[in-house]
Image 1 (cartoon, rainbow, N blue to C red):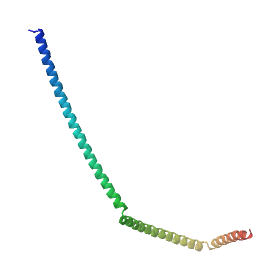
Image 2 (image 1 turned 90 degrees about the horizontal axis):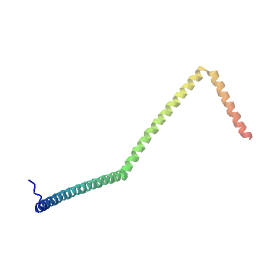
Image 3 (image 1 turned 90 degrees about the vertical axis):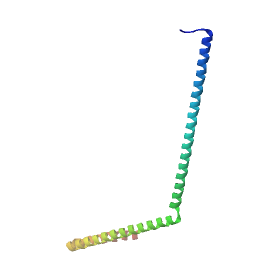
Image 4 (image 1 turned 120 degrees about the vertical axis):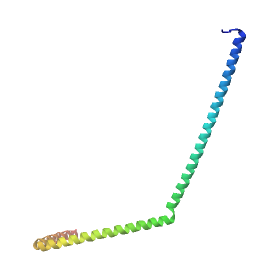
Amino acid sequence: MFNFSKDNVENTTDHLAKKSDQAIEEIAAQVKSTANDLLDAVNDTADNTQDKAKALIHTLKANIDRLTSEENAAALASNLSAKAGRVKDQVQREVSDTYHTIKDKTADTVQEHPLGTVLVAAGVGLLIGYLLGAKRRE
């Protein structure tokens, strides 16, 4: 059934050693092939990433140039000037409206309470006169 003779064992051992060497060589070739494929993929990805980065940098430079151009700066200044003019007009309208409101309320108060208004005006006049007179004496 089993032949354990020296020649048979040596032949079987040699045969197994050759098969092991062949298997190791096949595995090594597959590992080398896979490593080369991986290296190619990494290089392709790196090249692609570098190309994308260059494109983004180019776009960024173009945007910076566009935003800092004299024409754009002039347009921006004009836009800011127009907005400042609108704000100025709005403030003037509000101040004018407030002035007219206070003027109307004052006129109403004088018409409703003429004696009280005269007394308050006289009191304010005396206070201002006293303060100015005190400064002149110093």
